[in-house]
Image: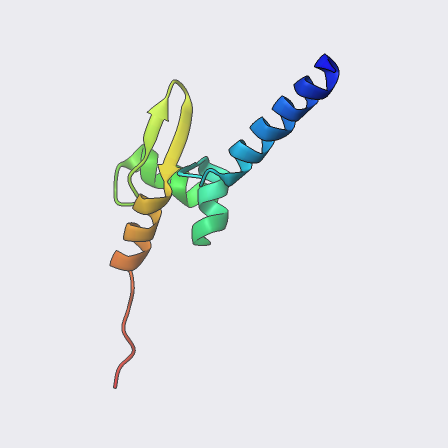
Length: 81
């Protein structure tokens, strides 16, 4: 019986973790999300010349999806009428 309860707990935890929206992406994820190469994102970080806002945790870099959306929206070009 305890084995069944443990298994149900693991399944419940797995489902909870899948239902939470992802808020941050690493450089590769941000690259896929925006279509901007990972190398370009790295260049912007090292040059500090533009690029989306990012957060560092130790050596790891993360981009908030909301910041990526804002960055892309700011670069939007309207078609000529």
